[in-house]
Amino acid sequence: MVKKNDKRSFSDKATSLFLGTQTLTLAMLLMVSSIVMTYVYVLEISDNSADEDSISGAQRYLEALTSFRTLYTSEVINTITDAEGDALTITHNYKNIKNAIPLPATLSMALGDEIGKFQSGAKTALYSPFPFPWRKQESKRIFDDPFAKEAWATLLKKPHTPYYRFEVINDNKFIRYAVADLMRPSCIDCHNNHPDTPKNDWQVGDVRGIIEVLLPVSIAKDQQQSSLQKTFMVLSSFLLVIFCILFLFIARIKQSERRLTQSNSQLVKQGNILTIANIEVEDARIKLSNYATELEGKVDLRTKQLQEHQQQLIQSEKFASLGVLAAGVAHEINNPTAFVKSNMQVLTEYMTSIQLIMQNYNALEENIIKSNDLGLIKTLERVQQLKSTHNIDYILSDVNSLLLDSSGGLDRIIRIVQDLKRVSYVGSNELTKVDLNSDVIESALHLVRNELKFKCSLTTSFSKLPLYACRPNELGQVIINLLMNAGDAITDKGEINITSEVNKANIIISITDNGTGITDENITKIFDPFFTTKGLGIGTGLGLSISNGIIKKHGGTLSVSSQSGQGSTFTITLPLTLSI
Image 1: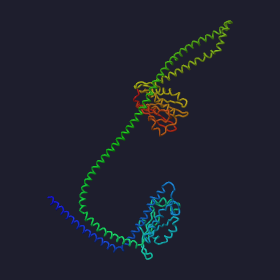
Image 2: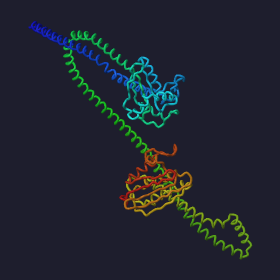
Image 3: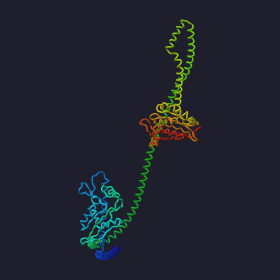
Image 4: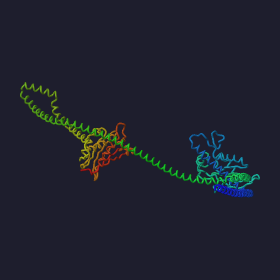
């Protein structure tokens, strides 16, 4: 069975190879015949197509020159122009100037002349009725030619249609092929701004001149026939080689084709699997990266919040400690002040008794003088001398004023101590019913008045307010903080005005100063923790943040309006829902 299958397989291969050889031979004969017939036919029509080839050659010639000039302008000239420094000069007279390169038009014409050296009789010209000074004579000479005038008139009307005609020069046929030289975006800036430009209002697409090429028609014909002969020889030489190669490898190619198809199918399947895996891996990587970025952002935000809360807690503890200390100091001051106050009252009663006795003593003096008793009179004189020496009359008349002033000072000390105890009181979070005008605002004013009286005047305008359930010590801290900030905003002499009013829904307290004000840049950040415009060591940046938190805890709002250089107004709005 194996041998029969081997014989059958060999027979099939031989048959397939024979049929492939016959087909290949027939195809080769047909190809050779087609090439020979095509060559003969092309030779016959070459004379008729010479003119068309000349037109095509002239067109490609000018397209090449135009493309070169455009490329030179955009890639060389514009690059040098945009670069810093003046290392190179761009001029038509580049051969006579050091470190100079030619203008695009100058280099294009030079390139045309070089190309013309390899094509006998080929010439290139660029002319315009708007020439630069160094091209005036040449353009005038060219425009004296009838073809140049006709070309300009035609291309001015139809700038995208070439103008050409055939002429016989020295018994040789030439084609004169001209196209419009249109103003391009990369050239317009130079032409309009050059100091020697004859026209400075060029627009993109304007016809600025004519590019003309003069080509011998015979050259195109010779080139065509030469190309055909070379092509025929090359095709004939390689035809036999191709035939042999195809004959030897046709069987292997078929077998390789089948194997390649199978391998390709497997590769496509594997490639699809790999592509899907890559997409899934990339999606997973992007998701992981997004999760990591989001987590980092959350960690940073939470860390910042914790730091801010920690600083606020520290500051709150400091305020609480200061409150306890202030309450203790106020209590300690209050006790001896009460003793002094009580003693002052007793001393006043004593002085009343002394003054009554002194009045009776004065009557006694008069009786002694009238009695003419020399002993009593001498004793009286000694007493009067002592009274005069110690100025007893003045003491008795001034002591009432001194007692009255001292009593007033003690009353003021007692009131300050009471206000200090009220503001610094650290108790429970229960609400207390108070009059905001007297128990909060005026108490705060008593504590800061001495601090502010040297730099500003304080004015108040209070409306009658309902009793308000609140934490008065916290609201007192807010008022003190706003008053101190207002004082800090006043550099010389200024005014601070405190008002209170009530409407249907809210109690409104406003503190206005005519200080330096707040800039638009800072006004959105003044309630942020640790933000301060004061100098280093003057403020912590937590005063307004804590004040804002206290007002929010009471269900209200703390807002600000300000103009730089004109002052600021802080407004506390408290809802009446907490009033009693």
